[in-house]
Image (cartoon, rainbow, N blue to C red; front, side):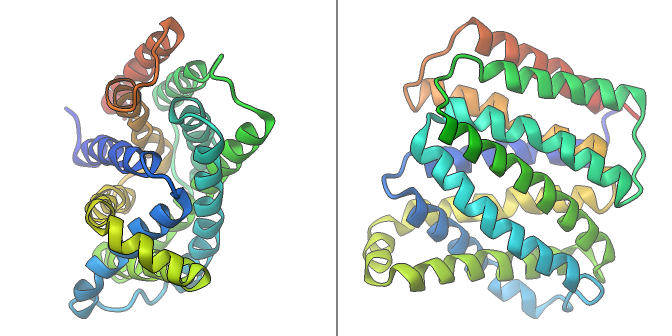
Length: 276
């Protein structure tokens, strides 16, 4: 029977793909990413009044803040220089391998043969989907950097949510500090330009910010009660949803490699859902 943490991760992946599609659809992607994160941080602001501060997890949260800033910049640059269907598979395909290694060697999580098999299928399918997608050296570099950043903040946040007084405490404070901090910092840097952009795009970015809170909040809750090597690849089911969005809503083309890669991801996700 499929357990709760696994279902949380699949739901998180689906919502995550929608958030990235909203980001890709904008013109000024750096401002759009900052506004999405800022909106998410402001939305959770009332919640911090009801949860204790994440004592015992501050070092994890500080490390996550630094890595999220790197992720923020690399993700935006990757989307600026390539199609979503090309860069997204690379950045998400590299992340679960490094995250699983971090889970085993840093957090002490377990990994079994079925989990390793499922992860291998997911990663293979994701990378296969990127073949022939016209990635320039710059796009490949930014995509790989994004994937490495995803793996690092995944391990850091998994450690943080397990060491905080409660999962809700870490989730609320993480979104407030990470989202509002990075978003506000970028807004201050861009000044009036960011205010003009926010005034014109606040509705779609606020919706994406709310979805981002739900998506990563589900992932963090799952990490607090499940092992990272199994759960991290499950979030990469987002690539299945991203391919559908890219083809049917963003007008990007699908080919046999994409379809075969999607099939491998599906089998890998099914394996992980049933693995123990």
